[in-house]
Image (cartoon, rainbow, N blue to C red; front, top):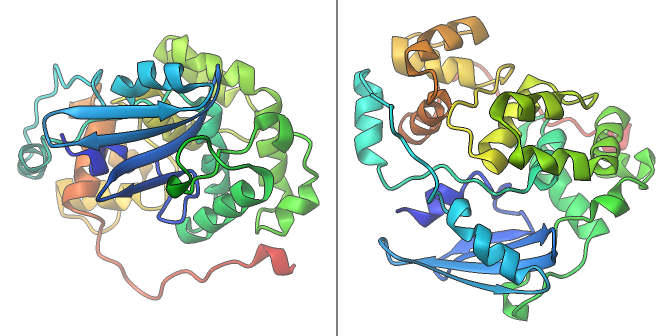
Length: 289
């Protein structure tokens, strides 16, 4: 298995202070039901080794197989489009992760709503650095824990504004953290019920729920409807059309129902994206308003 690509969705960009993936393996800081933990995961390609530190170390070790995709199964997945067939062959070593950390995945997802990814990653990194603390384990890892939901739910919206997060997203983060215990229960719910639990929170729609389900729940059928790039990617890869909308994306993915999220992951790895036209969108400096 490919450790770096499997864990790529868990890490929120290269500047994510809670996770590092390098030549020495993957280091990840997390908050577990038993307390903070740091895990160090290494792989020789066929065997996975995991070490853990902190009050939540035992829980993190027990959850590690799901984190690296041991519970992922592609049973029933039959690739038939040439691009999907090729991607499935080339990336057989990539598994779908299941972090079991719903609120932990939701906070950066909210930061990513309606803004450019680079900007969202900077905002989340700023949130972590301002309202968190060092993770347990070797100091050389240099990680910070994801912020405690109990802390974030009391942060005023104007403090988020300074990190380029306007009031609407700030209020959604605070509300999510206030109900973190209820959101985290989604890992034990049937798929449809888990999605209902997530989208019952004001400010969390189908796109956010699917993004969280991809990382925290390991949902192989998660489709982020409302994404800016995905419809174009799917339309280009599967139909040779440079632009598409959500309806077209869902139409092209329908033959893979049950594994649509898996197909999206494979297309992102194999194709990357659709052709771009025109200038890139400018970064929005909300903090200056």
